[in-house]
Length: 317
Length: 320
Image (cartoon, rainbow over all chains, first blue to last red; front, top):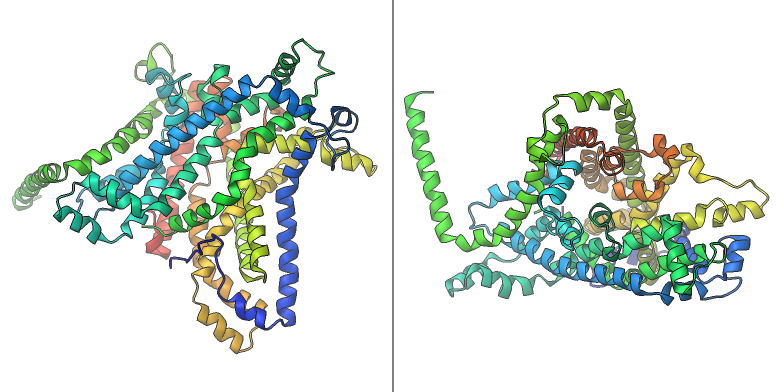
């Protein structure tokens, strides 16, 4: 495939819309009409659910009890957030776990993936084909969940350790292949001339290749950070201690377990309240917003790197 | 084999071990740089592969994977007797086929539209909005579904109610779940999948389009006769690669949307969720391992077959 050009802003530019504009014929108008109708419809479907969650989180509890989740704010209230943040220990702890795991996991994962990718992109490295297949084979066949789980729990003792949240997503063959194909496109002369100057392979990687690979590193970091931030699966499998829950799994327990949320609410009230008084629904929605917030606020700025990354990934090396 | 080839083989072998030695001496640092990944893959991929023997064993925690007693095909027999394998395989397959088909239509369609319409800033904004669902976790999706479909409080049921229509109990009507899951899947993944096609469109030779316009082709004709046909090879590859994974389901989606509603399982249970449930909830490790191995083998065969086809059609795109 031809390598597509991606504009620095991230949207894929369309060179031939320019002369369509020049000739606004009926077919162009009709295409735009239908096209925009479909696009706007789909875009609305993408946004409305988020809107509804946010609206519900700011709704007064009596409205929620009386009328359910509304379409607009009937009675503005921040009571749900007050309850979530009144006893913030557990949610802050979950935030802490997620931030720690995301930071450490992303850093190490990008390092290993790009370093491996670099070695396998070296055309003078004779064993590259053997090791490429050695890694690639793991994407074709896997032992499945059961042996993996038993090995992690019984042999590696990962249960209830922070490593259980980091290790399972540390090395990704696909990200390594993206790195490898990106680095194959860098001129071989860089490595060769640095070798002649006496630099060793690791130095070449750190000092020359990494600075030249910023778009790649930005993309892989984001893929990896998003995967760690949104992870609940490994937490569900390996973590049973509530004070080690990550953000997403904490949210999951709050959503699925009425008792957990009642406990959280009554803790923040300082006394045990009867369940009828506790704004369960509003609190669930507020908690969803609190748990999603950062990533959704960040995403318009990082989206273009995903677009770039997909384009890098689409060109198989 | 004749003597000649044998001796040649020995020479080749000797030179191979010599090459390996030379390589290790000259490029020891490169091997060292590979080491973390090699160790990782051995521990987290190759070691679990050896654990597939669990499918033929009666696992006892005390004895571990390798010392637990062999039971032959018993786990598979139980799995077969339970009669679930057919349903699970069918569900996994049909859901994935539906996802692939709708994915191609929506992703390619929206990519063509987005590429063609006028208004740079506005369509960039739309693309950003369509990307939004990709960024949230399945847990948040489940919160959204709760908000919309909850029987008493959900927004959709409120609207139905205020319109004088009966409330819709989603979590008690299994037969509507295939449609719901297909929509949820498209909702979450279209914005992301679209990008690959957009990139492919930008990679097309623009002169063809200009020549066609000069010849008087309108926008529909250009789309129908130039854009779509030139995207077909790309599409074929993406579809074939997706078909290779047709027996691997998206655990997160099925688990978080269905939750504990066991009455929905006939419509929503896939191999991945069954393996998880048997392992973590019912504790049926033998059957879980057997179903897992069955799925792994199925995946391996389909990926190899898909790759073989890709290799025949367009060798450049073959995975291996």
